Amino acid sequence: MSQRTKHTPKREETSPEPEEKGGEAATERAKKVREEADDILDKIDEVLEKNAAGFVKSFIQKGGE
Amino acid sequence: MHRRIIGLESEYGFLFINRGERIFPSERALEYLFQGIMPNSWSRDAFLPNGARIYQDTGSHPEYSTPECDSVRDVVLFDKAGERILSKAAERVDRLLLREGIEGEVHVLKNNTDSAGNSYGCHENYLIDRNVTFWRLSRSLIPFFVTRQIVSGAGGLVRDSEDHVRFVISPRALHIREKISCSTTSSRPIINTRDEPHSDPQKYRRLHIIVGDSNMSEVSDLLKVATTSLVLEVVEAGGISDRLSLEDPIAAIRTISEDPSLSARVRLESGKEMTAIEIQRAYLEACQEYFVREKTEDSVRDILNLWEKILGELSRDDESLGREIDWVIKRRLLERYMKGRHHGLDDPETAMLDYQYHDVDEKRGLYNLLLRQGEVARIASDREIDAAMVSPPRTTRARLRGEHIRAALADHRSFTADWTYMRLNDTPQETFFWMDPFCATEP
Image (cartoon, rainbow over all chains, first blue to last red):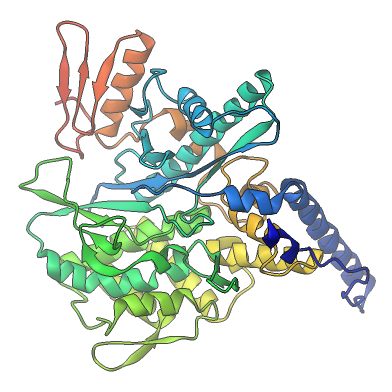
């Protein structure tokens, strides 16, 4: 359990993404790509939001082959 | 390319997460999983109407063997069908748990390593001619298997004893200790000497490869078995020999797995040093030369072209690899997630993502999420995979097994099946023998 405190997620407020320059079409495209990417990250969060540390620790198989 | 019988065995990781207060043993959840697949509720080992075998492996996890296939595309279809059979069974377990008031769910993961450092395999079987000299064959193939991970590695995170986490191309490769042996657990080899051809042993032997990763990506899965079949045929015909033999294959397989930049060089017995891409290219060229001479059919040309395309993309770290090759798809997903959520490699969320990539569940599985979003390249269609869940391959003896099992189940008749025979247990105990795996019609 002491391990869990070591892995506190490092969330930051500021976005490191620079704004795209160039034509409107390129900006639109970039926006769309970003939205889709965020959409996937949100969906990943839905899968991972539960106790990730607990999940990983309990994923032990007794061998086989 | 001549006809060859090929099959894949995949051991799946199994995890029951209990979120509630009530105690519910993991073994019960696994029992529910098998009940959703097996014709007999008490059974832990059965052949299915698609000709495949599913059973509980030692260590309480499910193992699925594809039926005998004689085309590499069929191998991918039936391997994927296995994932979906388990996914449907897992969904059923979750519903049963809910009904019993148990707060929790089961996860079935098509991967090869757990968080305690255990490994379980994806075993490939290729039927080969009994008369081929096994040591020469093995010697010619080992550099191929050492480097094949760059197209078929699953990618994964490894935590060392000092808690540093790193990404490797093939998690399985780090568990390989020998070139050839009969072991599968204590000292895992690249080539296992288990020789059960499940057919006439005077004509055939089994080539049992246990070095590979299980694949989620259909492209990696196809390339794994397709390039192996091509190389095997060239070696059987006397080509390649030992000119690519490595000074230390076991050190080399690690070096390559530990180097996602693909720049590491490994030393050959000749003293020459080559990258994994260069060694794969040498095998590709030998296959191109051989099969062009043999007047290649289109399906072989397609495989050669795909292999060449992927090696080219690997050499320039091409963008499209992130849609095609398992370890690159996963690596880019990890990077995207870590960047977007400000996580490090050693955070538990990142570790869980590494596992959830392999979850066979259509919603929780992250590879499946990418697939639904149209972000990965495909070999098979959903319709074909769904068909392969219930119908056997049409061109091998699996067809006979599948059809007889379907009929027996429909008539509620008890039966005993194995790879080479099937017996109906009611009198007069009618038994069918299918010794020839290439024969898809009743003898």
